[in-house]
Image 1 (cartoon, one colour):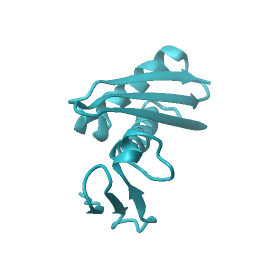
Image 2 (cartoon, rainbow, N blue to C red):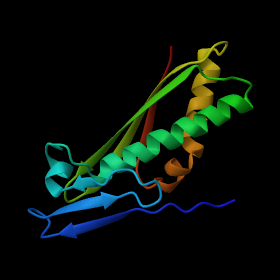
Image 3 (cartoon, rainbow, N blue to C red):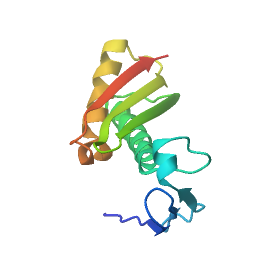
Length: 141
């Protein structure tokens, strides 16, 4: 079964002073303002492509990690994933740093690390972002 999700952004003005609104067409989540200033300076309540990528990556990784844990016979009590997507004007997205903290009963750290790194490599968003270095710091709590 395939799924297609849709979003749109309506932009007005030039890059520096203009602004946009990103709409989440598939889910109906609230429209979110986006500006160049939010991308390169203080967000001030607005989002950026990098924040949207970070959100996509954390949710995808968490799902992939949960599935890999289940395949290995484990169920997490909790998985908390963060992503830091770094953007350098004139260069682009330079790296993504994933951090995961998880509580998983009965799992030793060696197996935890193996499963977490496998999930990082195999999650569909990681696959889509292969052009960018992706690191993972995984902590078993």
